[in-house]
Image 1: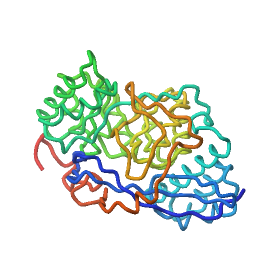
Image 2: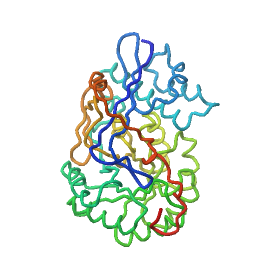
Image 3: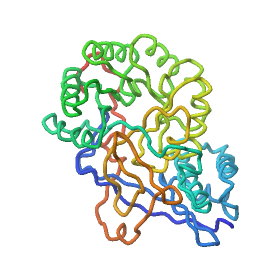
Length: 379
């Protein structure tokens, strides 16, 4: 069997609500979902999700190769772009191809991916994380109530700008979840400096037993994360925007992360390798953004140090069917061979709405004043 080509699709996820964080909000709630389909000479196809970045430059590492050699092909893609940098968006293209390769491998084996990767239990523990920064306080209870109806007792709120509002929203989420002792996390999305983070988290902890504080500082600030971890009770969670083990090494060596995160958009092999690096240090792993790459849930089921996975929405993108159920406070993986992702290309072609994570008002564009505030409030 040989890889002969690939094609790309672009669909959207309609969240049915504004989505965003402290950096910005997409008011329409419609975001883009890139899809990559790897083709073979035997007609079996692999589906990947992530980005379309640099696919043309990466594909020569795969063309004519047996898709079952996933690990070797992953490293071949890294090697292909090592001088021009395999970080950032290019790493997302590698992740999309990587996911498609694993989907192919599992299909050829006639196994669901979670089973191929060695998992015994198809259930993946999760927490509610609906990117809630743009949701008015009076609508927040209904949003978290929908997650509570699926058994969730843990939630991550977006915040970091207004302490009083964040505390009030934790109270709303606690009531909506209806749990005796819910696990709460706060995600500041790299918007603070170190001392601001210490002050803000310390104030939160006077009222809330915070499980972790996520992305409090810039992703590369290993020393700052280590100082913050030693100054607050909450665990420090970070890593979703790091691409490649070489970027994790400084923060792991500095003791700057307590919950090691990996972005789902970077693919399956990446999460496996991050999990091994974390496991060697007795640290738990939490994958982030499974809405951008549902296949990563299969890895979460198989790794020994998985803590909990981010469940951002209860729906799926237009024209995409996922063989899984969100129930019992997590994800129940199905039995369909492969990663469990099916694509209806006709439905995608017929849908005309569009959205873009990179719109200027959205969460993927950093505020020019982020990290430059001394008080809790203000632009």
